[in-house]
Amino acid sequence: MLLKRLVKCPRCGGDSVYDLSNAYRPFCGERCKNIDLGAWSSESFRLPDQPPTDGSYDEPDLLPQ
Ligand SMILES: [Zn+2]
Image (cartoon, rainbow, N blue to C red):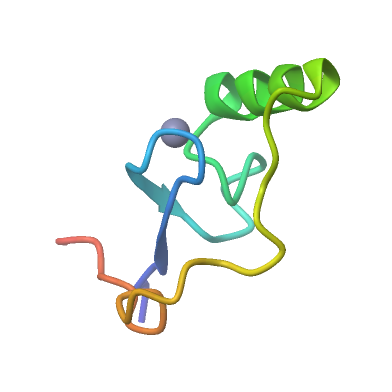
């Protein structure tokens, strides 16, 4: 019962563990989160209000264990 939910990192598009163990969720790590905050401060980047509805968002992949 240790399945973890994965989401796409909104910064790099890679796998991100959406779990309490990931303090940087929904980003994959500190680096992506910091990059995103930097983009916000420069006002050159805007996140959509809603997550992408490409069909895969509701079916998170599971970590191979
Ligand atoms: Zn990332």
